[in-house]
Length: 221
Image (cartoon, rainbow, N blue to C red; front, side):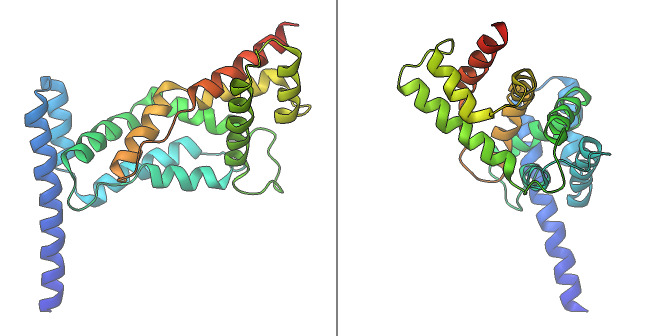
């Protein structure tokens, strides 16, 4: 019985620490009345309630999409992590912004669009993690092209694209890359890294821009 009381007390203490950290952030940020109301509400959420925000986000963006790469679901679940028990002010700031972001209908639509693109034409035999492999390959090839001074409209660029996308529809690839490199999605990844205590990931903006430019040149021919 005593052990159960201790466990319950520990849970309350952890929750109060998070609440205190979030309220300290509210006071420090000097937010508008609307922002303060939202952050006060977020501060008073229990760990279970904060978890439900994440569950609701995941349910909406994946609803009815059964063929998306399972690795994406796993990564999103990790990325939308809850606050640690004893968060730093930076983690609190990031979590508050992240919580606001994942409740934003427009952001959810952006995220769902990216997942829909991933799921399109994806068969049941495609291994988990293939999406990450493609992005890694893109960065590798495009970075090499940039290093070698290959212009996106050059014949050599066409060869790089062939190596990257094969006979895939260049317009479809361009649209998928545009969905995946949305600035708000990049911010989501950055905030998630902070909440999880990780270094913010590189956006690899230049390699992605090069590939999109090369695809545009190919489509213009």
